[in-house]
Image (cartoon, rainbow, N blue to C red; front, side, top):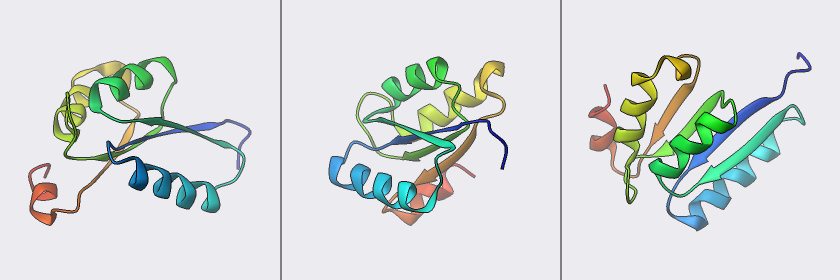
Length: 99
């Protein structure tokens, strides 16, 4: 692994699930990863712009800006071209909307 830190942004409005995800991710990754969190897409977009995010793991249903809108905003801006995006939802049908 290189010495570059990799920045991961985890986005979910359900704090219990957010902290569960953080626990799973930190248990599996090494010290070269830095985690950021957000509870909605609006805040996530701001954090992505300020923190050189490499990967976003986002819920699809959230207040203010949902995961679909966040995905679209990320893809609209050339600045975010290198960000990978993982969408998650308890509703399997909602994930199909992204594809």
